[in-house]
Length: 341
Image (cartoon, rainbow, N blue to C red; front, side, top):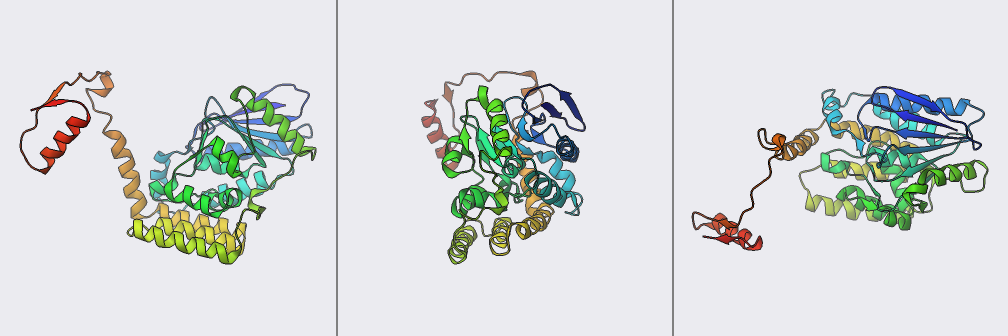
């Protein structure tokens, strides 16, 4: 067995001797912030496939997180290309679908902490997923003006069913590992201290055909019949247009989901990549990414937060004026149990 640590721009290989032939790929970067991370992952998968002494693969994250997904800072660089970047199709189809999911050697994702966005999409490419208690799994891309671009629109509905998948994507809200187990998104909840060892045994059991070898993209048992699925999507579109009439990317996300249901998962992946590039280059995405950074910048005030100054304790608040905003300020002071004048 050997461990692989994946870094920002390079990979490091550490070899240990074990009786069980299982490779563990550790994503030591919690954010998929650089294309070289995916290139490094491909390199180590290729190496694992070539080695006769490796029978199975475990994909996990170093430390207490699996992966928080794609780094938003990198999104700004991608937006400068106006969506003209073929790397999206490479990651979704060539790496995740053909190499990982289509591999002749099974892989198991060992999840703890966070598995969000591209991190969860990597996990869904594996043939099984084990999670530690209280882990968070989700696809929050829509809050940034884009859609899941690594197969999330295709695999999530096949794992948890269409209604729940649409809810998770449109609301950008994660689920706990406990709920994920009930939904079928993860196969087992395992104590954190036993997560890696259990995942290794699970992966080898799949290789020995003692546990099911599941290809998420080919699953259909959780998908509703075509007519019912279209009604679900129609209702979701109607609700989306009412709640966010000026945003087009949620509707584009539903288009990608529908393409996969009608034409199959692979066709859905290509549709997803096309829509992802379109959304990434849109003014909506650029604006929402700007808002994301602007909101976080408000918590970083030069000369205050960088000096680790502590706020004073407030006991009394004065409000000048008697208009609507003054009234709201008074009400807020009451709710915070402040005295006011």
